[in-house]
Length: 141
Image (cartoon, rainbow, N blue to C red):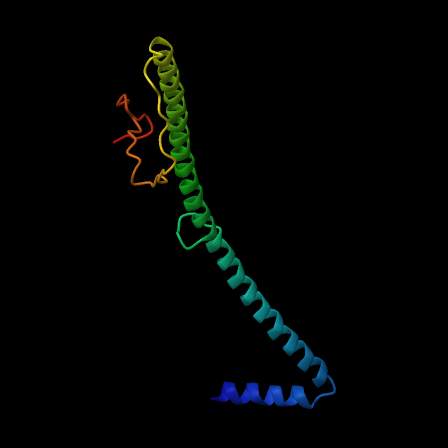
């Protein structure tokens, strides 16, 4: 208890002296600097957590996930483009075969289809994306 009384008497003497306003300003500035240092260290830890790619909550982690999803979609788009090219080639080949049959047999009448066509939906298309059953080199399963 003597130590606290000694500290209290020293503080009382300090505030009663002529330099009391100066010491008060120094103490306030010291407290402000310490609080700013605490805030800076907290902000630094938040920034480190946001840029850490090992967690899903971090910004970098979310970017890695989005990059993986976009790469997968790009790979799927490449497969779809290949299927479209194949269908276009098959359509041109079948059109050529029809024209050859028309030239060979001009006596057969060709009647155009009616104009009442229904638009295709995704359920109508049953396309085998791998007709030759080529193994997928990207899939290690």
